[in-house]
Length: 265
Image (cartoon, rainbow, N blue to C red):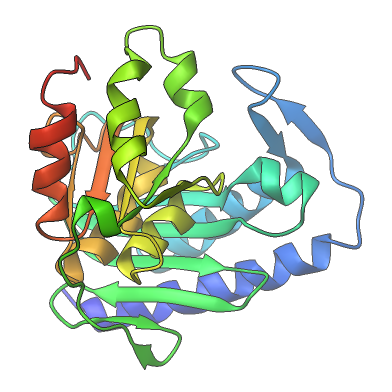
């Protein structure tokens, strides 16, 4: 498999998609809701996903596609090469702020992550990797992650999701919030995982994400020595929604052992 060619194509398509999104800032968006009034989708989410699908189908017709907006394939397994696409991760931020959103694209082979690309469109920052060859911010190499204790750490989490999930006793998270140096919420899983990969935050946890939310970010974090699992410490489910814990080495195990082990995640 010519991964270098796929990598080159993927980065070029992401840049082109970013240009389309930036151009849309001057236009009137069509905005609808999906599962609830806060689950937004715009015409740009759909157009960008269809843009990627068109490019992939033309260049790599044998590849499969999983996309947030449902224009890709219905997958029962991860056999072969699968592209996992979130055309605009952080749609609410895109609509309200025109910033703090990203394009997220992960390419997997038989369930193993090979290429991860997350593009912060507004800041023109592309975070990208081919497994085993280092991770980069544009052309600059990103250094490996270093260990960090809880008391030194900034933890990214979405308090609203913790409160909304009826199965979860959110009180279990309070000791972690108390013991950490601070918490942050950015409203976009892709960028929150990038911030773990670059050391801007030390861990990110969520109780419910879809595969396209974390597919690219997981590859980036792991490439830099971080650890990515669900909140039970298990391998992520790439075919359905799952919880997520992405963290620096050492810190990941400490959070699991000292704060999450009693929870029914």
